[in-house]
Amino acid sequence: MQDSAASATNSKASRAGRIKGKKAKSAEGGAPTALATNDQTILSVLARKVRSLRTAAGLTLQQLAARSGVSQSALSKIENGQLSPTYERIVTLASGLGVEPAELFSDSPLTTPVGRRGVTRSGQGVRLSTPQYDYQALCADISGKVFLPLHTVIKAHSLREFAALARHSGAEFVYVVSGKLTLHTEFYEPLTLLPGDSVYYDSAMGHALVSVGKEDAVVLWVCSDNTPLE
Image: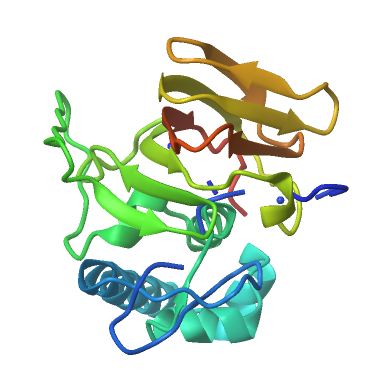
């Protein structure tokens, strides 16, 4: 289904929320952002699942850091519910653990029976917030998906709000539901997209989405992660 800089040459979304009375920093080192109570629950599920999967795989924090590219200190904070990772960090972390990103947000073991169906009611997707994007992972109860669908609000209104352009494995498809946005990539001129427009691009190419005007654009963001697991 995340997730950047004015003169940036490097990684997206993804992916800080709002914890009552506490602060959380994005994995990209962004400014602390207060997390909502619901987001605190999401971080708790993420913390338990990452620790459980790492332990089951017999990996130390140092070993998982080497496999995923997420620093040992960031992993420790994630496992203690103190850090809301950006989307690209979730993708690389899931890859290092040998699971798909959606599994990191489910306390229950996800199975892959034949003839599956997943349903997400309006506004009930698994939420993840970063300074630039608000995501809802859709149909997160289904494991083994070949793509990750995300209902996303583009909060960023300037490329200066990103530390660097996002880069990770796979490909992405974006369909504009409402608002106006600009897609910034490292190999093409900025592309303006209006409601009903869509775009497909390789995720390895640096990229970032920025809303244009006062309104936050809303998109259906579909991501795939084709990185072979070690």
